[in-house]
Length: 317
Image (cartoon, rainbow, N blue to C red; front, side, top):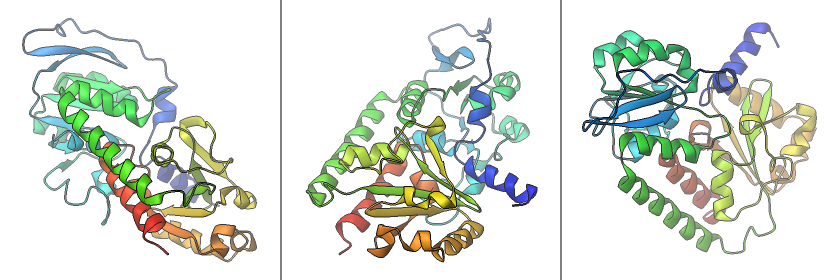
């Protein structure tokens, strides 16, 4: 692998959780600005940079990252702009839902565009901590700290910032209703079987471990993971070499790719004896999943994941 392709692989791995590792390890001094005082028009929210008084009913909202965007949409709030929108392709869980939302860049937010949008609240995470001094001059800015937190914690944070507790409760009720319907449809069919998840980039094979977004959905439904994936891992990601392909095996194998190069790598893997020896491959129980959807990290995407589970585990002979 060349240095250039290696850098590209690393960038792909952080499409959703970009820069978390680097930023969450930084020590950030909590800052409470003198002007950030609670009043009848705003309320204090504690976040990774300190405390910020956010508007009671914000109307012009900017979000950073697809998980934050998805959570806002779940709560019935459509932001003016968000980062990572340019990474979206067709047939994702956000298709048709981001129309009219301005793209604000990928890893580095476009400060000029944000300024032109005149937001009254900016919601991000600690990956944007380096931009916080500038962002907080544009509008009240709150950043979520991912360290030792889960996607559910992020949803609770966005709910608190937007003051949408009632909408959040309805969203959770919808989620658990769908979980119960899926559990009833599955019955005992997969009681003793393992569901494996594998995501690919050129030369890179990884899965999502305990407490990750897809793992928590599978566990809520009552499905088991292979022992090699049912572990706590830094930022929930577990990496495997090609020589360790047997560790990605299961009775059912879901595979996610993001780009044409990823798909090419998958085709190369399919030619290897280690791949052909996987029991999921031999039993023809290998299914494709959308990379961004299954790693979405927000409640809005759970419908699409559950749809896939119905499609492949219930409706497939």
